[in-house]
Image (cartoon, rainbow, N blue to C red; front, side, top):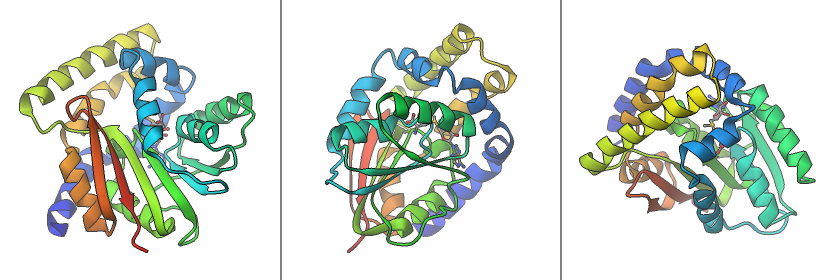
Length: 250
Ligand SMILES: C[S@@+](CC[C@H](N)C(=O)[O-])C[C@H]1O[C@@H](n2cnc3c(N)ncnc32)[C@H](O)[C@@H]1O
């Protein structure tokens, strides 16, 4: 199993490292100002419902230390602070523009979210540090095996990793329909928000990266392979989106 994931991750890195290293930051700098509105439109308004459903699966206790990996505009940190205002929330993302918008959004709600700008393949936090780690809608852009083992390292024993993302549906018919739907929404939102050159150039990448990503079951296997225990998931929308929960062994 370990070898299969190494081969997959190597293939994904070879296919996409150019985009990951050179283009994505420019894309997110372009979209930061309209990212949240574009997502509502692209998901036909369902994103808010999925967020509610995902947040309901996350157990947080007063005073917990939480890390949101690839935090973007702090959607997750804000949602969890609304649920448990005594949390300490640390966000990390490579895009200063997304985090600037995220900081402003948090301030509007009266929340403080600490921000770390950098590449999450190496998390600049001590071992055994966080009670909860979240990662939402970013794994396709990452060497997810490496990032997951970093998450395992920074979680306290017994701490929990919650993951939410669009995944590759296992049913080929659903998969085909899904790519068609994504193609349409990406073209529509980029036209609506007058996206710039890098964002336009990456529209194909956003679908290709999903084609090479994992199904819900494969992601569960990967997390177990990395060393998590009690890994489970809940699918939404015929496996197009899934919520995974994985525990660091005590
Ligand atoms: C689609 S957005 C998701 C943002 C947020 N998690 C949400 O749910 O709205 C993906 C985010 O991942 C960040 N990202 C991508 N690759 C990264 C990397 N290697 N290190 C840190 N952040 C990265 C991007 O800057 C962007 O903010």
